[in-house]
Length: 98
Image 1 (cartoon, helix red, strand yellow):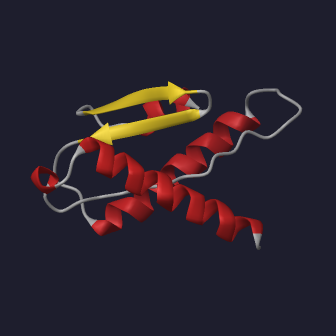
Image 2 (tube, rainbow, N blue to C red):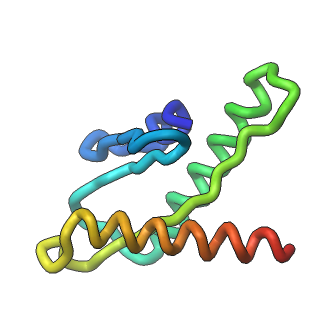
């Protein structure tokens, strides 16, 4: 998982494993709402390629929650991570219904 995050991370972003199977990509800078969808898609595609080339008999997948804020001075890191986590769970639930 970290390999996929590292592959899509910009030079000013950091990849963090918070424990177990939870990872974060944290960046401070100029991001837009379009970046959320684009970065999620790029990460998902990268993870799928890494999974296919791993030689493992199973597929590696991830539930993704992305949160972008216009002004990072107005939100704490804890609040940003909580928002991303909530979005991840919403995405996970909506994907189960498909």
